[in-house]
Amino acid sequence: MFHAHIYFALKNLDSIKQLRNRIQSERKDVLQVFEPVNRLVGPHKMPMMELHFADNSRNFIEWLDEARGGMSVLIHPVSDEHLLDHTERAVWLGRELGVFEEKLSS
Image (cartoon, rainbow, N blue to C red; front, top):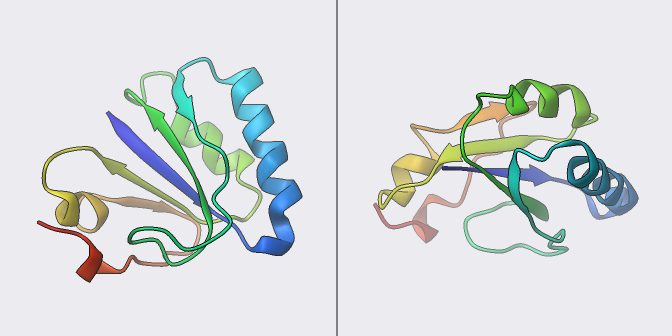
């Protein structure tokens, strides 16, 4: 299982909503698509939208890299080691923004 966090500036709220609609209509391999969160939450340094997907067997990561429109994306595996998942095991599409590590337990 993987999570993807797509970060957006509030002025780009329409863009993230369009991307959300596109993911829901085109990507049946994405297990869950959450509503955009218009504030800081958890370890995230910008507003973001979260997605859950099982694996990359259908090239979702490559598709997302082309569809993200310049927005930064954090992709990480899901385990009980949240700090490692969000840092050392993470992959970034676009500019790496980092996370508030102090909000994660290892």
